[in-house]
Length: 178
Image (cartoon, rainbow, N blue to C red; front, side, top):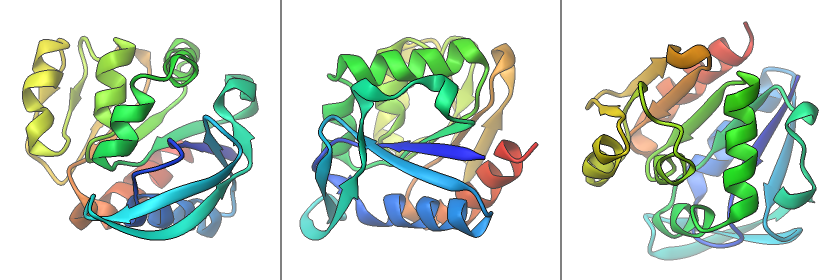
């Protein structure tokens, strides 16, 4: 199994990048970090404090859905806002949906799914401030620790905040591993 994690190059919530990366490698799978530009990815803690710098090893533009078995989108307000304006990120997400491959998104990451137009008929959770955006995008929002929605022939796993990371990672590992 090979899983893609996509982020912008700045504003990624540290725990929401590191915990999924660890869960993927603990499952014995390969992980590839994609960003608009290869190189430094600045993480943040609570969207405020700069923290670690991680490395994106491939650009989103160079990625192909056929190279991966699943997609993880970490949160971070700035991260999600940058990704939802990135045409390559939106195209990759749409390709995952069209291929019926699973996507996991946490916290503010569903903003990218809103922009990609893939939420009609899906039920998901997110950081609470995204509720209106999700419902306006014809998704159904719930306030749950983790939500797995298999509707429309593709699996979507979502969670609200870093506090939900344990449930988020265990659920996406289970679903991706099917």
